[in-house]
Length: 124
Image: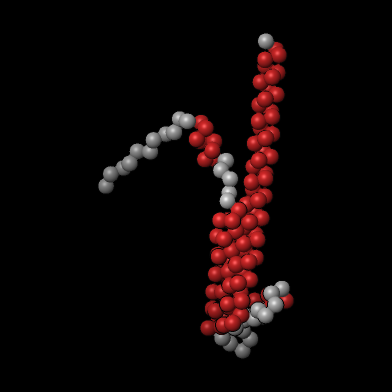
């Protein structure tokens, strides 16, 4: 077994770009949407297969928010669709918020650096 040595990047611009990378809103929305939709579908199917006198009383409350949803095989497919849609909106909104806050932070840091540079030049 060989150990690979990781080269240290000395280029600060590449390092800054990697650290402060923007999130792609659609990609984040699709990823979160598929995970949420899959989890809701699998949870519904699990409760359907588990069975019992009362099947999924807590999960069936989602029917109040998602029209047509119930703890049934058809409800699992609707849950997949609704979960994907809601997850997409959550992921897209998170990426939007992340990118906006990152842009604000970097503009404040840039402004502070410019003011410090101008102050230093005026002092000389």
